[in-house]
Length: 129
Image (tube, rainbow, N blue to C red):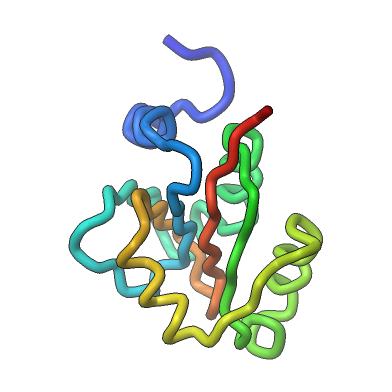
């Protein structure tokens, strides 16, 4: 049994299957999740687990070479916008409708319990060398 890191066996296994340029969506409870990508639903109650906590855990496990979020996050959820820009200085912002379309191309969607709007990000996997 793992002693640290991500303990959820479904999430840990899904992360191990990712490769360079694969897309991972970390989303709030409201983002529509299309058929296709693997989904690990961590939502337990509204706000639990939160977006920031899940994102931090994923960033400890993944090599990320790029990230996209909805342009709307800056105004509708400035706390999340600041969090994302802190993690990703070159964060690409796209309209929310475009972000939802990107979700269809994702290899993995990690659904959090976050109940604040636009707490979503699409991560592009990199390589550690």
